[in-house]
Image 1 (cartoon, helix red, strand yellow):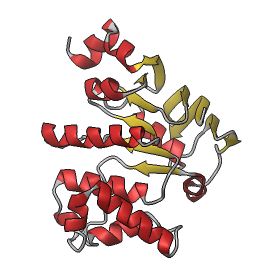
Image 2 (image 1 turned 90 degrees about the vertical axis):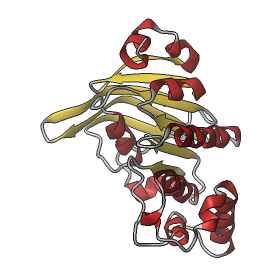
Image 3 (image 1 turned 60 degrees about the horizontal axis):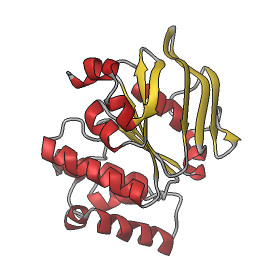
Amino acid sequence: MLLQTHGLTSHYGRIQALKGVDIAVAEGELVALVGANGAGKTTLLRTLSGVQPASGGSITYADADITASAPYRRVALGIAQVPEGRQVFGPMNVEDNLRLGAYRRRGDDAEAALEAQFARFPVLKQRRTQAAGTLSGGEQQMLAMGRALMARPRLLLLDEPSMGLAPKIAEQILDIVCGLRADGMTVFLVEQNAFAALSIADRGYVLETGRVVLEGPGRHLLADEQVQQAYLGV
């Protein structure tokens, strides 16, 4: 497994957001995490990337314990996160936003990474001198993804990439996620649209109030009565 957690906990003051979470993500997999608002999905991603500290348990990445590692060290190891709400730097132009994702790269290596993202997201090349804050929601999501990919991560953490987008644009974003997996990228996807996420996932986890309550292949979870009633409106 590329990524594993064992008994992972995290707190906001006295409030325990994660209550002994065990997950595993294999190299090259697309794994989805679904659950209701407030279940702890974003907290889990933030704890994996190091932005939110773990209060107990462990995180293992590529056979190394990174539970206490600083976020920048996790980036150096190959972990990149696309945050909820995109969080692009609005006053800066598109190209500068992308270049921030390659802050650890230098020279031709960074230029090659930039051209790779322009090839993946042609609209960003067209908007390269445009302020990021003036882009549409879908374009900003592409920019946030491209910024993370500039680091050439081994593991991509995606937090609600379809949030707030029109259905056709959301479908386009998830198609891009599938393309990343097809290219060999390992993806851990947090998505409130359970049907869309589990439809494209190799495996999935269901999180409720900070605990994993179900896990299995994406297609099996789609057919699970509990998942259908709670998340699919069936």
